[in-house]
Structure formats: structure tokens, C-alpha cells
Length: 584
Image (cartoon, rainbow, N blue to C red; front, side, top):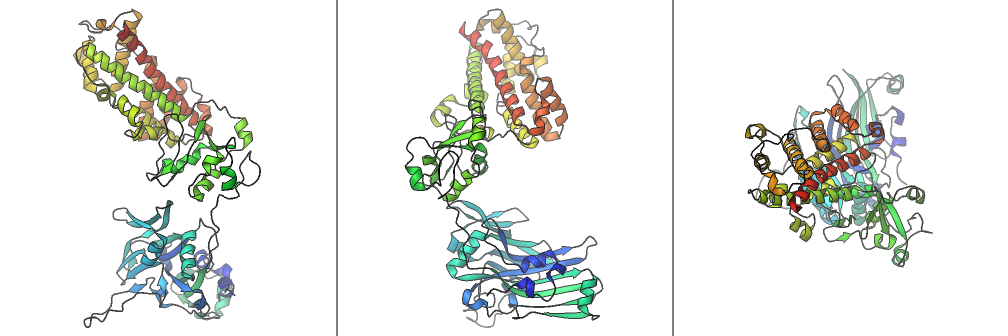
């Protein structure tokens, strides 16, 4: 029968620090839990005194050996191997095999009192098929991923630490409960914590009564699984514990399975066989936030299709299919397509974002979504590039459209957005409750999308139209575009052809403010607000342009829609008169 370590510990559990109670408690079967498998840590109180220390290793011990375990040696130093073998003669280390008192370890840890280094044990990562990534510069961490599924952050922790009177940084290694149990189950083993713990305890009446007037109290447990003491020192009562605890049983976590999930509008639990038989109908709706997992990781492909749908995929291993955007934030997908071959956990992930029929019924399924807005903006920018190119040729300074706006229509027609990842970033999920910071970041991307038009070219164009060289030499891109709009609008109003664009006299109203450009000036203000935290002014501009800023209390999604539509409208305003000039 498993030992109840908290109940049999010589000190009542309510008198113990929270950290020690966790170390003495078994790990449950929650697959999402992150289990501490190695540690070297020191915590200090506000005065700088070291008041809590943990040295921890975890060993994989065969089930049959668990009942006979006593305190293992490795817990004292918190490492599997302390110092290095002595060099006496050739071959004297031929049988060198680091272990935790003869048992395999989860984290390979080495230290000598001054230097410490860590990595996941070779047997563990090879048995589970994990891939290591090193993150950081001076503060390096190792992260192990299962790229076959994929599952990221299966195990992670600090690479190294130094000790000189105090540890240079705390080391803590955690591992997915699901994967740890999978490894232990494969080995027929139990995860054993071997640790040293010390802490300064307050001298409460209950603890003083336990001490019974003595300066020292030995802590012995039935079964010899722990040793330790409480003693008075200059700072109070010092608790020290050496313990070996069976923390992780040889039992698998419940499997994440798509079999038996209930989906709104579909009767009964769904199985793969039932889903595959749904040749017609059987459509379900997902909140598009289910895409965020795939959009925010470079491991996945989540580029929207030419028709606005988004079908996340993973390196040719699996893919969602027939995901169609409907309304602003919904995705419609046939249950048959959803259950096509892919890891069950991906279907379970989608299930977390399923939308009930009531919400679908109350949603405008024809409202424009963020991908459609991005596509409309791109169309206007491509038209702008074509118009500028034709205008430049007509006035004697020819340029190619892609040279002017940074996007090639031929490239997009051939390979869609593959060469332009900024378009996919701009078209990422935009929930109605979008945060202010996410809104500002998206507005910054929106502003930068059209900023490739060369300033030198625009100044040449304005000088061709008669604008004084001295007046245009210091103009920024927004004022240049506004000047061009003023000029072409005036020519269009006079029913002029493109030949009238070139002149030697200064156009009268070319430098005037044009309200059609206001959305572009707004995105510039929002870009600055993102960098300089001057959001109040940009919010006032939003309100002046007609947006009800009271709605931002529920999120900035509608504000993003407003800005998007405004920018599209601004480029439509520029393209219209240029197109008509060129057509006459």
C-alpha cells in the first residue's frame, strides 16, 4: 500500500512550508501538470537571509524495489554525479556509470560544489523521441520537444549554475506529466524524488511544544524514508529534511482522444467511423481563436488560402482541411474533414473552441473577417503599384510596380502569400476582445505594409507635377502621398488626361490637408503610440474620425476593423482618380 508521506511525516503537515508539502505529495494524473524532476534552488527572505533550500533529483525505480527504499544518497547534493572519478590507472573508470544509488535518473546532473550542469537523461529523450533546443545567451535553458506530434516544452530547465557562497541562479527542471509517466510506464518504474530540504520556520507555539524545551529534535519516519531534524539557530528554528518519496506512479495519464466527443448539432458521441460516414451535412462551427496556436508558431503552416479559409498543417505530416471562414470570427468545417487523419490532440484542441448553435444563430455570417480585409487592402496596394508604374512611365521616370510597392502581382498569382509572410501576420486572428497592445501591434504592421514606396521616387513625381523642389525635399511619405492625391483629384475634377500631370507651375492646393488621408495619418499615430505609449492622442483621433471609443472597454477588435476599412478607403481614394487620368 502506498505510503501517505504527509500523514506519516514527524511534523504535522499544517506546520510545514508549502514547498515541502508539495515535495511530500504524490503527483496526480493530470496530463497538463508540469512535474519538478530536478532542482538546485535557494530562496531568501526580505533581509537577504537564506530561508529555503531545495536539492532534488528524480530516479526511475522498478516497482518491486519501491517498498524497500530508504533515503538515497543523491538527495544531499541534488545531483546524480558529484565531482569526477579519480584517475589512478588506465581503465580504472571502465565501468563508470552514474546513477542515483544504482537507479537511472530523469535529469543528468553533475556538480562539484562550484559548478553545476544539467540535461535530460539520454535514455529519457531517446526513448521518447525528443528534440533539444537551447534558448538564451548567458541565461541558457534547454527545451525538449516532441516534433512528431508536435508537442513543445515536454521537458525544460536551466543548463548550468555556479556556486560561490550562494547559487548564481536557481535551477529547476520540469517535465510534462504525460511524457514522464509514459517513460516510467515503458520502464515499469516509479518516479522517486530524492531531495534535501531546509527552511527557517517561525517559532510558533505549536512548534515550540513539539520541541518540548529541547534545542534539537530528530525527525525519524516509519520505514526510514526520511531523516532530518529541527534545531534552534541564531535566526530561529532550522528544519532540515533528507527524504526519498515515491511521487509518480507507474500509471499512464488518460489519453487525449477524439473518440466520443460531443459536437453541437450532432447527435450522440462522435467517432472516426461516424465522422467518415458523414458525406453530407454534419458541419460544425469553431471560434477562429483555435487558429492562434498555429499562427503563433513557426513550426506550423497557417497561411490563409486564396478564398479566405485557413487550414493549418504541420510539415506534411497532417493538416486540417475545408476550414471556411464565415462571419467575422467563425470557422465552419465538416465533421468528416475534422476527423481526417491527424493527432487526436489536435481534434481535442479544436473541440475546445466549438461554438454552440445559439451563438451561431445570433451571428452575422456575412460580416467581413480579417483575412478578407487583408486581401482587399492587398488588392488596393497592387492597383496602386500598377497605377504608379503607369503614371511614372507617362511622365518619363519609369518604374516597375513591385519596385514601388514591394509586392509582385505575378508572384502572388503564382505562389499566393508564400513570399510575403507579413500578409499572413496581418491576417492573423483578430478577436473582438483584442487587447490594446495587440491592436497597436497590428496597426503598426498595417502601416508598414505600404511603406516601401521610395521617398525619392515620390519627390520626383511631385516635382514633375510642378511642386517646388525646396518644398518636397523634406516631406515624409504621408505628406508625399497626400500631395499626390490632391494633384490627381484636381486634374480628375477638371476631366484632364495624364498628359496634364506634368507642368512647370506649382499646383495651388497640392499641400492642403486632405481628409481622405486621415486613416493613414491615424495608423502612423498608432504606430508611434505603440513605440512611445502615447495612446491617448491616437484614441482621440479615432473618435474624431467617427469611431465610438466607448466600445474599446470590451476590446479593440472593432477599432481594428475601423482602421482597416479606413486604410483601404484611403488607397481606394488615391487609385480612383489616377485610374481615370490614365484611361482618358
